[in-house]
Image (cartoon, rainbow, N blue to C red):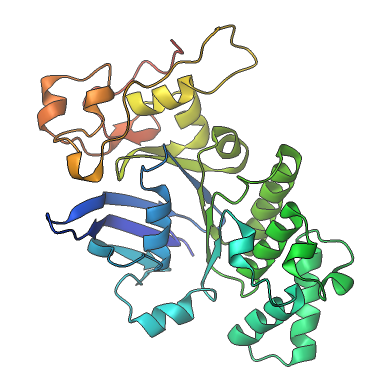
Length: 327
C-alpha cells in the first residue's frame, strides 16, 4: 500500500448513563502505515486501551462509537455488522493483550489452540495446520516447538506464554496488530526479547502495529511514531525521537520530566500536579489546563486542535517551541 494501512478519523466513544452520555474518547485521529509501529502513551484512564478496543471492535456494552470512522486498508470497518466484524478479527486484525493467561484457554493445549485458529482462517487439514503451528512457535522463539505443542498454558513461563499469544495473533497474517501493554508483567530481559520479536515479525510481514503502553523506554526502543493521549484526546503526535526529546505539549513535557535518567543529578523527579479529570467533569477548552503551568484564559475557553509544531503536531495554544528542558 502507498497510503496508511489504518486510518482513525475523529473517533468518539460514549457511555450512556442516567445523567446523560459520558464521552470517553473525543475526536481521536491518527493513522499507521504498513510496517510502522505507533506507540500510544498517557496516564491510566487517558483512553489508550479504549481506543484500541474501539478500533478492533471490542467495545464493552454499553459503550458505543458515536462519531468518526475507522478505515482498514481504505475500507471502513467501524460500521460493519457483528458477524462481518467477527470474521475480520483475527484474520485481518490481531490482538495481543497484557495478561496472556486471559488470552489462552487453560483447558486446551497450546497446539490445539494454534491449530484451531489456523483452521478457522484457512482451508487446512489438521496435519498442515500442525506443521504451521510448529513453525509459528519456532518463529516466536519457543524452543522444541514440536514437543511444546502438547503442553498446556500453565506449563509455560510468563514470557513463553506471551510468545504463544503473539504466535496466535500473527497466525492468520493480519494486516493490523493491536498490542495492549504486551510486556507489563514481564521482567526487563524478557520484555526486550518480546518487543524485538514483535517488531521483527510485523515488519517482515508489513503489518501496522498500535502499541499501547505507559513505558516511555518501550516507546523509545520500539516505536517509529508516538501519540500522547490525555482525557480521551490526542494532545501530541509525531516521530518518536522528536516527541520524546523535544516535546511540544506541556503534558508531554511533564511526562518526560517524570522519567528518571542516568544523566540527571536531581534528587526528586518532577511530577504533574493534580489528576486526570473524571469523565463527567472534563473541563471546557483544553482538558489539561487545570494542571498546566502555561494555561491562559484562552485555554479555559477554546479547545485547541492538533497543529504542526516543528516535526510534530500538538493540541496547544502555547506549545513548547523552545524544546524540552527538565525542571
